[in-house]
Every structure is written in C-alpha cells, then in structure tokens.
Image (cartoon, rainbow, N blue to C red; front, side, top):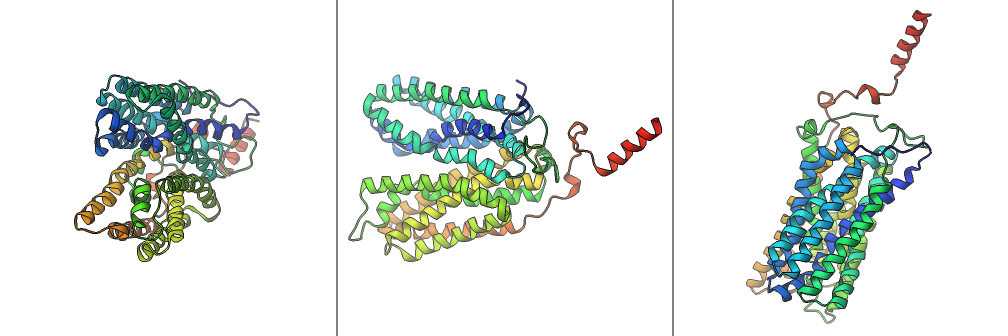
Length: 452
C-alpha cells in the first residue's frame, strides 16, 4: 500500500485528527483494569492471571514497534494504521470468543499477543508523518496524537463499565462487551486510515517553517550504534518506570497511604483519584511536549526527571500527613510521565533527523516494555514484603519511593550525557529529497551559462 500523498491545498491540520482516531482507540489498554474483576469472578482467575493480557500487550507493544518500525517507514502511515486496525480489532474478537467459550488462553492470545501488535504498530504509525508535516513544531504535533493514547482510558473506562452493567459481568456479558469494542474501534480507526496523508514535499504545506530535512539524518541501523540512542533509552525507561509505578497501583496506594488517618480514602474517592491521574497523564502529553518546542528537549527532560524526583521526595517525607500534597505530587509525576512519552519523538528528531525517525522511535519503545515490568514489580514486590513484615499505611511504599528517586537520578545523568550525533553516523539525503544549496545553485547557473 503506497503512502497517500496530499493533494495541493491539503491542510496539515487534518493529520493530527487522523492520528488521534488511532491513538484514542488503542489507548483503551489503560482501561484494562475494568475487565479484571469480572474476569476473575467469571473464570476463576487470580489477580496475577487477569493482569496477563495487559502485561503481554505492553510487551508486544514494545517488540512490535521495534521490529515493525522499519516497515512503517517503508510502507507509510496508511499501511501502518490498517495493520493496527486489523490486529487491535481482531484481538478483541478473539477475546470475545475466548470469553464466550471460557477459554482464557484465547483472551491472552487475542488481547495480549494479537492486540499488542496492533498497539505497537498503531502507536508509532503517525509519528514520522506528523514530524514531516510539522518540522517547526514537532513536540506539539506528536503531543496531540500521543495525548490520545493517554486519554483513551477516559473514554474506554466508563464505556466498558456501562457495557458490563448492561450486558452482565458473566462470561457471555464480557464476550459481548469485547465484541462491541472490536467492531466499534474498527470503525473509528478506519476514519484515520482514510484521512491520513503524507506531504508532497518535505516543507510543511502552507507553512514557512524549516525543512524536515534540516540537520543530521541518521538511519535506524546507525542510530542504535550511537551512545545518544542508549542515553535516551535509559531516560525513557527511568521516567516511565517512575510514572507507571504509581499509575498501575494508584487506587490501592492512596487507600493504603491514608488507611490509618482520621479521614481514610473511600473506594469511590480512590476511583476519582485514578481518573485525575489519567487526566494529568493526558494533559502532560500535549502541554509539556508543546513547551519543549520553546525551551528545548534536554531542558524539558531536566524538568521531568529533576522535579519528578523532588515530587517523590515530598511524598516520602510527608507520609500520610497531607492528602492534598500527595495528590498534587502524584498529578505532577503523571503529567511528567505522559510528557515524557510525547516529547521523545521530537527529541529523536532533533538528534537523528526525520529520515527513519519512526523506526528509531519503535526501537526506543523497548524501554517502555522494560519499564512496564520493572515499575509495577518494584512497587508491588516491596509492598508485599513490607506487609509480611507487619507494616501498613504509608510505610508500605516508603522504600519504593526512594528507589524511584534513585532511578530518576540515573535518568537525569543520562540526559546530561546526550550530545549531538557524530557526523560519521549521518547518511546522505536522497538526491530526490535534497534542497538546493547555494553551491548547487551556483553550479546550476554555471552549467546554464556554459550551455548558452
């Protein structure tokens, strides 16, 4: 499938909605917890078992993005969005079959493996195209799209809960909810497939911004051989580990933190806290990534990692003495978590150019797969050990919080080590995409005079 080229006069502002249609759909992954209790009840699963489809989905997201990134660059955004549509929707349909027949392995295969491939390909599908349309504001452009992934749960959570209430929370009701999800997301993602276009030139249509080919151009193969790539891998992994550690255990964490106070947190209040974190996650993706266009990528990551460590320190030192402080710090941390995801493609563009930025981004997302296992493991394992030791309340998480501070410090150092890529890793720009330089213009004029 050849990339669809924009006709003359096509507005570049139609591309972000195309990307959003995909990211809002695959962002449902953050709402998986809605299905956990019904599945545990209907199929007799443990909490660890019911988390398996989500965990496998995140792992497959990173792996499919890493291995499929080059194909996305080669075949274009429409091909990538189509593959994402087929895999993500098919994952729900397989899950529906698994729930209807009470075969849990089909749900793991469908949602986790097949759907996870759709997550990875869909996540990176618009990145390269958006940066080429908005070379003057890459942080804002990718932030708009990736905001959808963070905000997808705000739509999917109440929608899924309403369906389970209407259809029932037994195996047949879950199957019907999966079926509706699969068909609905297929239609919604199809809008993005039909709408997306690539620019006719590397200049933004109707804009006076810089060319997308300005600066270094590095292939994905060369990029992974540079220290800059691995520094950014560490930066993303540490930032995501710190954020996902709170996000994955948000409701029980705030409940445990203030269990021994005069005003414990109710179940409904804990659910509201989770919704607030999702909103902060989404707002950070567009807000902080747009700010990075103004203050620079390295500076914005100094904020994410440095201020993030400060927020964790405040939570650890304050303990259960101040509920507003806990909530405020958690919201800031989650805004940095979302901002880190949205800013990383623009950081990659600054260092490696747009030549194969989608493929490079895909390889970097293996840091997310690592953090998706590491963050929850740290928080849950330590909390379990502390509980076995007879501790409760805020003391369950104190050690985890200090570990997160250490991880963010590691990320901060890695960010400071980022330098411009050595020219030996650059690749020559294809002749068909090169912009005429002053030297080439002079040579062309001399050739014309000679012919005359």
